[in-house]
Length: 165
Image 1: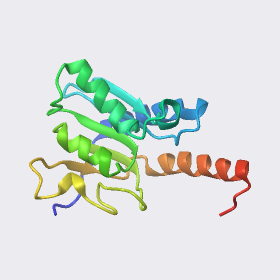
Image 2: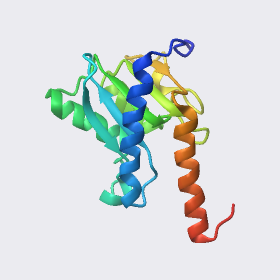
Image 3: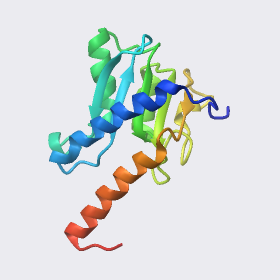
C-alpha cells in the first residue's frame, strides 16, 4: 500500500467547510450528519450531497453517492477523472467503491470511521492494488470539527432514546 498523501493543500480546508455545511442539511431529518462535495479540476464544486437514507428510505443515499451522482449529472459523464471527493467522514466500502468506479483520483476526508471505514482504517478500498483505479487519500482534514458534529448527533440520539451506551 502507498502511504497517505502527506501534503495538505490549503483548498482542502475550504472544501471541507462546504462538506460540513452540507452535513448540517441533515438536521431536519434523522440522518447521520455527513456531507460531501465533488470538486472539479478547476476548483468549482460540481456536486454536493448529504446523507438522505432516512429521508428517501434508500440505503444507498449516502452523502458521497449523492455528491457523485450530482457531479456526474453536472458533467454529463460518469467518469469524474479530474475531480476530488471531499467528505466529512471516512468513506464506507460502498462509497469508496463508488469513488473508484467513478475514477475519482483524490479523496479528502475529515473524521476516521473505525467501525466501517474503507479508506484506510478498517479496509482500504481506495488504494487496493488489485483494482484498476487508485486514489490519493488525504485524511484528517478538519478532523475535530467533523468528529464533533458526529459525536454531538449521537449523544443527542442517545439522550432521546434514554440509551446511555
